[in-house]
Length: 102
Image 1 (tube, rainbow, N blue to C red):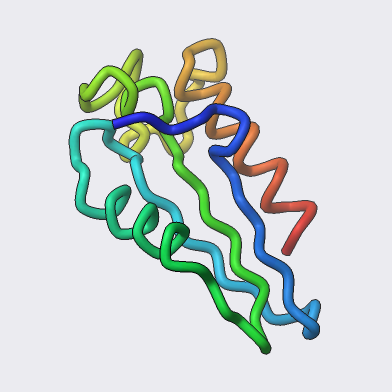
Image 2: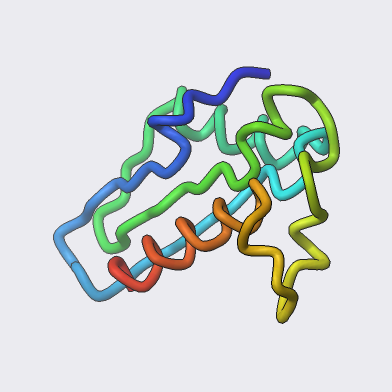
């Protein structure tokens, strides 16, 4: 399963800027159902008139390697001092992005 790291966060804009939907998949790189569902949505096209949609493929290195995580489990991350790990840096990037768009 290949996720382009430059396209791991995709935003589809609408005419109504204050209504946002954020969907995240790939917290665990070896759990494919959410990733496949989002890829299908992207391939079939997105037609949103009233919502801005952001799709995030969370753990792109783990997805590429078909493993649960690289350094730490993102589901166990909260409140821990793991900013130096790959997942910690990725979580920080996702949080920064969400703070801008939401």
